[in-house]
Image 1 (cartoon, rainbow, N blue to C red):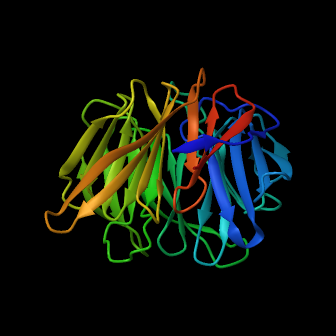
Image 2 (image 1 turned 135 degrees about the horizontal axis):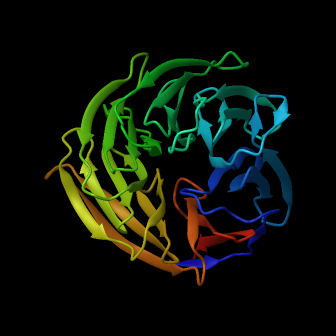
Length: 336
């Protein structure tokens, strides 16, 4: 069971975007960072461990490092690399990378904007740190951009462009368990629902394509070699990353799923959807039968809120936070 804690107020409300909440716990400083996107502004809050002290910062989407731009931010997420942590913003104009506290922008990548505006919007969406020193970002053309990030400094380079998707990328996730034995360590998905499973490295290798089945896959996670996919149908599906075999299908929500998260240490899964429900599940893997199972643990109704972001606040899943469309606060829950 979880109980509701005091909410964190933010400067402006949350936009109705997938995965519109990112959380970075910093245990050594007893701090937790939160980010929420609103239009062309990113709201950033650092909260003390006792929940009494807050510090606010706002970042605007920029066109390059000089001019302010009105382009909408599509997503923001922290990427934890072996030697550093970067805050990555994606927008209609490009990709920005900041130091983890948002103080300094270390890299800007402009998207290719066609000279003649087409019917299709241009944007970047889907952010994940891949094994090694790579950050992967998806685009509306279906490309995955792979950035090689040095251990310090601003010499970030676009090292590879992966072209397996034909629809706009919706989400990218890397393997969250600490076990290094799993070959598959990255998964990407798009508006059609196609899932691509990758092995990261100096040359990214496509390991498997899990076909779409008629629904947008809005959120995806990867844990101990299991792909966990959330769909516009409200369903959650579990697949084996390498074989593509479906382990389980759950009718988890009545509406579009907007957020998934996994507590890496405990295997708890969190799902949040337009139906105002956050559900907590337990994932488990049987080595004997080589299958994965999903068990329902808890449901929290966030009354009258269209949920657009939900994240665990630690690796055990003992606390989680939720954002909702047009809501100027982050709602927190802790385990009783």
